[in-house]
Length: 237
Image (cartoon, rainbow, N blue to C red; front, side, top):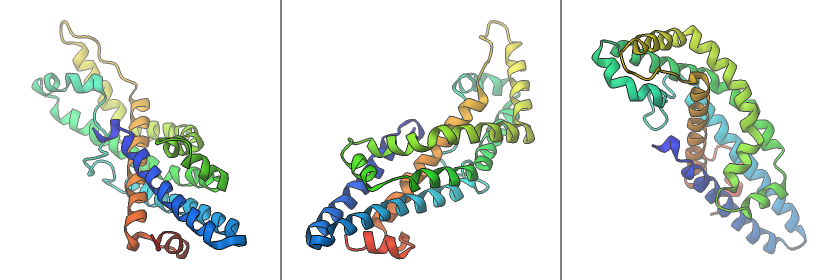
């Protein structure tokens, strides 16, 4: 599944940075004494591209249906529950299982707005040397950089919101009822799942997946370059 494969994120983000750094080298050579200012301008453009992409992605996944209606990032049932789902449906729990999946995705949508200030802080700290470090750091360097500057804080902000919203939309109660019904069946392994941890992980994976798509749009689609700086940096490629 796309969410279990983080390769698209690293490929798309790295491609953006590699293409931009190529422009940077060309501008630096042609600018002569002013080459350093051109390099800083490109680095600023890269930071702004990431900022625009992260804001768009957070807004996209944070709207009603942002996760649930997107087949590529829709959050599935936890594996332990997924393995039991067919049998649970046969004993009349289809409605509860579907309701639990809806509740999980709604909770992820509610948490998405927390990502905006976290990404903004990390991107603002991205210096020109960070840009070149990412460029020279290997195929997954961009993903490693973004995760290293934001994932810990994002997780800390997401989990309490996920827990609160799961409770509000009755997700915790639904899971408890499903697990109780399953555990009463003879000969089954007790159903256990870290629902909040699983949901937080999948919510962040979905967010990064959408950010990668937004970055690709900025790189390839002139219409997506919504600021003067983005048009200046990416428009000549």
